[in-house]
Image (cartoon, rainbow, N blue to C red):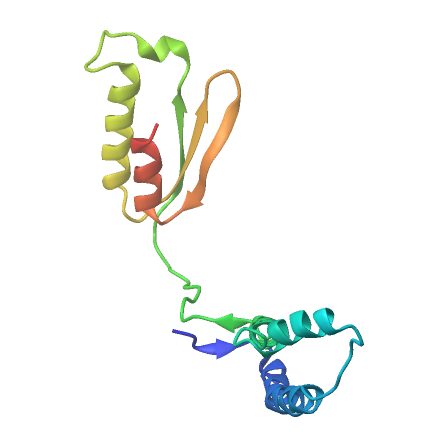
Length: 160
């Protein structure tokens, strides 16, 4: 799951959470017997709120949030690593027209469909090349920069 932490020293701050919880528990026990309100109905209402089983939930959530924040500051990393791949390919950028003229029905199913099939077939035949994809219809837009991940390019072509 988590292979390493970029800043593991933040995890040492997690050691401060148990003493903080102990301090809260001892403070909560001492403050239960104190009378804070001289008016009796206020005292009864406050007592119901403070002695219920939910009275520790806000503090527990704060401790949990602080623990998760400290773990996030430690920046956990997974096993995904960058990989240098040496290939003898070339860089190719496919440019596809998506304008309304491509909706003509002179090819099956239409020109866009035929171009999509031809581009996907071309990508499959070029395993060692870096391939990018640019589409245009009035303005050009880079769909995919040059990449060796042909599955991404093929998926983007199929979604056109």
